[in-house]
Length: 168
Length: 467
Image (cartoon, rainbow over all chains, first blue to last red; front, top):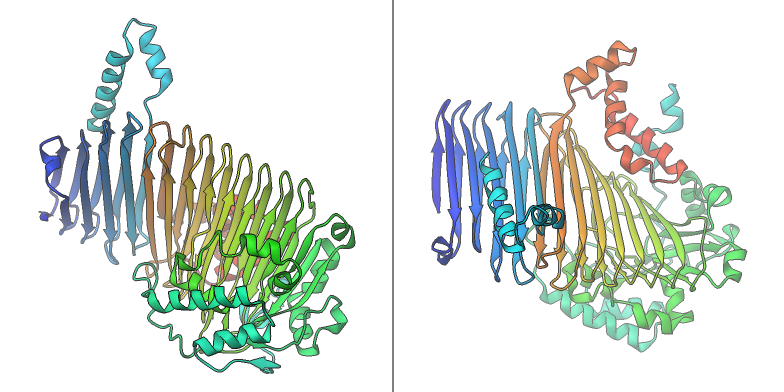
């Protein structure tokens, strides 16, 4: 397990990429502590293959902010387990958090397990999360097909755009 | 007296009263094989039911207490009385109900509600169903609405076929407990093609202290049939706690539509640990409308197993957690067949140190094509001592599934309060309006009488509580 601490006024960006190599490790645990006022963190997490990941962010000071953007593509029997946990204890007023998780399932043998949890003990906060799990849109495939891309190429373009969208 | 007070006094006045404890039959405290045998003997049950109970007791004893969810350390199984009855039989005329029980339900407005707008009414007091009545025209159509004890005697084939099939005793510790010591509850059977247009209602009341109420409800809705069942629960305010561990099993056969509405307003000394589950077959529709206002700890996750193509599930729940209350509620949907749809909407409000948690599960099994599910859970924190959690879980094993989840946690904005105050509302009125707006998705699904009552309850809770 790794613990990352973010100091006063610091804006940290953490990029996690789960690829074929990293997937061999059993499970990945990360805890991010926002220790001082105005500390902020953005976590971008990409699943390009099956992996298990737990990300915990603890807002330990006032006016801290966090954001998790997760994009994952599951194919060929990949199992993606993406757990995120945001904790805002009492006293960390003015904190903000937003968790966005999106996954594409490319075939029937793949699996996604997503649990974006929030534990909030402070009322003066903005907290939200959203998650979606879906196949590639047939509309998008049809759009690209009508412009001369075959299905395979179109799928590749859509996946690429989907993953890049997270980085934006 | 203000208008609000006339309409709805505080919990203690309206629901928190108690009648002196008086029992016709009662088992000793604590749980043992003897107690289970005695309950079965009192009810003169057939052997097969006793065997189900004894089996469940073994499962109960072997299962550990759940370690997730709320704090269950205050539950001491030896302290509760598992069966207590204040009436010897189920009456079908209100006049035959014992006087003290009648007084209780009169105060709660039950027979009045029956006269006004219900197709059938059941009332359970402690462990025993004291009153059951169904409108004659529904009876003629073959609708059965009775207590589960009578159903074991009168409809053994149906009960044998479905009892403990939707929620097996081994499902969880409290389902096992219920299966071992269950008593009372509603049994509803709607024959194929019959539409019951007016709701059926049951009311559950715990009067004594340290008592466990373990009703068992079984609802079977035939092909193309429709029914709406409403359930209300209250208990007096005592300093010692009571345990309510119910099991509800719903079977919606092909094309059936069933809605189950609960307004739970237990006093804040009741552990409310309920297992509710429905099996939805082809093209059927199951709706849980679930209001959790009271209790010390509620752990309740109405679930739907979508077992047939085109089945739909709708789970709508609100939770209000006040001082020292924990509402751990949510919903679970299992998409086990193709083209199934589900929607979960959950709203929670925490105030005065209360804690509300949303705990949900959406599972799409492999091979269940083109399923869609949307989950929306919103939480409102009304002060800085309260707490709100969200634990959604999504498990998708099928590529063609479309799952969306959305949640937010926030507080009432000062600007919103300011806006309403400018238009002549007091601060607490403004807060009540905002809270009511927040849960309007829920209230608009309730029968009007309930919506009005809920609205008043919320207004009352908001009085003198300005963020």
